[in-house]
Amino acid sequence: MVPVSVKALIRNNSLVLFLRNPREEWELPGGRPESGESLEEAVIREVQEECALSVTETRYVGSRSCEVIAGKHVLIVCFRCDFDDASISLSNEHDRVAWIDLRLPRPSNLPLFYWNFCLDDGRV
Image (tube, rainbow, N blue to C red; front, side):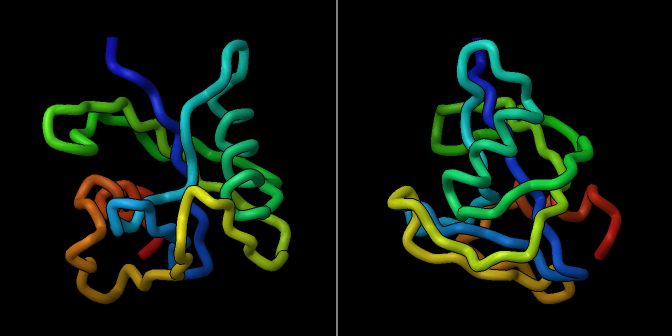
């Protein structure tokens, strides 16, 4: 069975919040649901844990199976998340945060599948 990961698409107009992981790749905030947790509950919890933002609303964007590292596929379920304005405070899972502008070229260390989720949201 393919593992599931929820991801948060957090926007400020054309800017999207990305976190840099230990592989030095940009990724959307998120992670795996815990036992008994809904996907929406999981994405809210993960955003709080990873960057200390309080999600106020979630909307499903899409899902697809993605090869996150060579030979490892994960079903990524993406939600657009509204949030209360607050300062971002990173957990120890990531070392940098960036608001990346979708109107500019995709950074080479940002996987195409994350970029495509952002474009699927239709608000570039």
